[in-house]
Length: 189
Image (cartoon, rainbow, N blue to C red):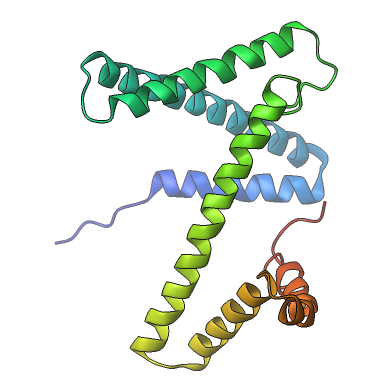
């Protein structure tokens, strides 16, 4: 006979999530509880980030110490990590009026260069992935949803491309796709 499993952890997670949602919408006592849950989540995320950074440093330090495969890349990563941390500590020691990361005189330019490089690489990967996914989808079976996906991909890629005539014609459609359906679930800011 099969035992029925009561998902206690899932039930607790759902209850906390619903309480937080209701507290953010309604306010009052439930809002105070939601605020506590959000603070707990922020502290948990911060601790998880710290553990992740320490783990990253330990793994790459051991790779550099034993000069294993790719140890030079590990060394570059460790140097960059130490440079960013030291730069941020220097900025905070100068009582920077805007303590946001990436806004100071040391980490600002570094953040801009790294962020731009990472965004450009990821944008290229996303474009390649979208074209490949559209190709695979149409090769498997042509359905109305697959045709809509391919049409949206073509419009977005042509509108963001460097062709001036086509890009200008499709700019309005691109803006509507990006601002309406793509961000429909996003909270208003």
